[in-house]
Length: 57
Image (tube, rainbow, N blue to C red; front, side, top):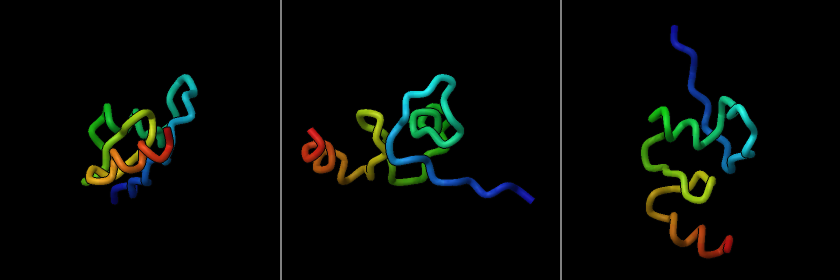
């Protein structure tokens, strides 16, 4: 039986080497959940990326 994939963390902690739940690592490996992307080291939904980042800046 396959091991269940955990959701990536909401924000990258910038550790080296990258942790197992890093959103940047998931993006590079292609294991991000559908409908999610990474912007400015944060895990965001595709439709809400600009709104979330505008508030954070």
